[in-house]
Amino acid sequence: MEVKAKLKYIKTAPRKVRLVLGAIRGLGVEKALNQLKFLDKKVAHEIKKLLDSAISNAVNNFELERSNLFIKEITGDDGPTLKRWAPKARGRATPVRKRTTHVNLILGELVDSGKKEAVKQKIAEPIKLDKKIADTPEQEKKDAKKLNIKKDDVLTDLTRGNKEKKEIGKKISDPRGEGKGKNTKIEGNIQKNFVNKIFRRKSG
Image: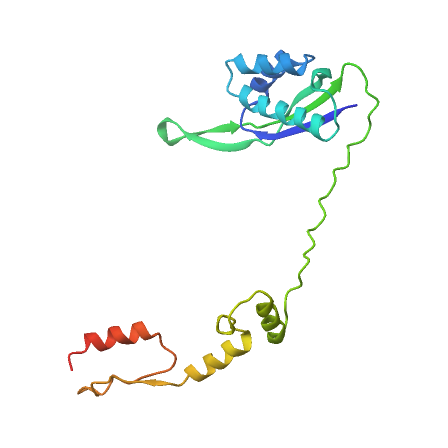
């Protein structure tokens, strides 16, 4: 059984990455992780994350034993090169090539377990609700009676709509009378607090 993992677009030259890959090629996963932990290379941290990911896939998806895994194959291939320019003397410029690397990892088994396919994960079944959602105001009132809720506390969509219609078009005026500008009358559905603030500001 083989488990594959890939890491693309590492911002390090392949020549530098292959130095790290050569140190762990053919080792067991535990020894390889220890090597990467103490290697004084910047890219070792990225390779360690790739190896951890491959081990997790092998254990969780294929149910393989961690102690039975080893690095069967690991390669550092050339990725796309970013081309930049560096300023030099006399107004000249020289090219700068920022190379990237693709790492391909294959884990194998020391003792073949005979497994060839990933284990199918069980999908959780949706939760079924015993009580159905009420669609009509009559049903809501019946449910309220069962739960011993007061009628005033139950406000259906129909009653809400009627209240909104009644509020639209109401005229709210200053009880002290209109001012000189005659602009204290406010029409439409406006919040009461907002209107009170306007009345306080007006001097009369």
